[in-house]
Length: 219
Image (cartoon, helix red, strand yellow):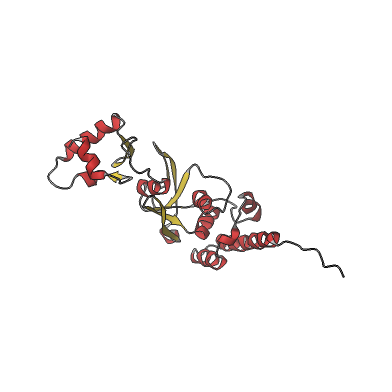
C-alpha cells in the first residue's frame, strides 16, 4: 500500500482503525509495516495500538477530543468535568478529557492530549447520549445531570455542599431537576440521593440570586 492510497481510503475520516485497511486482498503484515513507517515519518499519529489519525498537513478534519476518547476505550462516554465544562456548568475549560468506562481505569498520553478513564460498575453505566460535536462528528457524552452525578460519585465527599460549591457550578437552570433525581434514584446510591437534594438547593439559590429586587413605587 502506498500513502496516496491510504489518503484515498481514509479521506476526511478523523480517526481510523487498522481493520479499515485490511479488507480485501491485502497483506496484513505489509499494512502494519507501512503504518509503522508512516508513523515514524510523522505522516500519521498513533493514538494507541490499531488507532490512528492523519497528521497535518494531510489531515482534513481535526478529531474532536470527545470522539478520540470514545475510540481510545470502548465502551466509554465522556463525563465529569469535561462534560460539565462542555455544557457550561462550570467555568473552567477541561484540558484533560475524563470518561467513564466499565473497563479498568487508566490514563493515556496521546499525541492529541491526555485522556483519563474512570471505572464504574455496569449497572451505573447509563445516562449518556450521542451528541454532535462538530465537523460531522458524534460522540457519546453524559447528560449534564449524569455528568454531575458521576463527578459526585467518584469523589469522596462529593455529595456535600462544600464540595459542590467548590465546583463553582453555574447555569444550573440548564439542569433538569426531575432527570437529576431520576438518575440518582436509578443508581440506588444514598450518596447520590443526597447529592441531588443539595444540587437542588444550589439551583434554588442561583435562581433566587437571579431575581432583580425592584424599589417600591412611591406611595
